[in-house]
Length: 291
Image: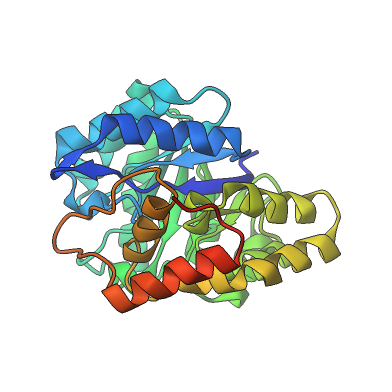
């Protein structure tokens, strides 16, 4: 079953090209700190600005470098044909699972999204994780729709980033135990675990993967008090990752750790100078090693 601490990997750039050396360094850093699943080419990975060849290169590189962690590769699109193409590539490259976002911009009805996911799932054998993030896509995948999708054999989970814990609870109640309900928001990791979630696809794990891993596994291992303590300790960092649009703050924070350059691809821009200084101070106060 898919569960645990999962990182929504940033995509490192150097002179507006994917920085392979830094990408491999990020993978090693995650594995050394216990991350269970690597998630390249999601929202945090600036997938919307990656060209097809870059998208494929990032996934292939992460799979090649990974030794212990599984790979949940971002492969969604607002076009069903494109989603099938990219999901097939993820499978061919060796990904364990594919993360498929709801069709953005189109705003399809729920029946259209069911058909979309059915077509994608039918095109591959690997497990599909549905990605619901209404703030980015303009459409909410309703709990009853997720329950219906869970009946498709290789749809194995949902990354739920609607911000609605009740919605996650309804999904967990209506699906089998082996269907993974994953938090898509760091600040809601603990609440979602408490209503039946099995893990998180975390932005913050780019920065402190060991602490995010400790939080999730404390809960999964039956230590709720420890999980709550870690969650409270991490709250200031969780909030900081969204001072501006993701991945602007986390890219700045990861660069402070010396793991990659603070370079984003337009239309994303670097963190405002006053927030950069504030973030640097917060990292120091939180015991995060910076360079």
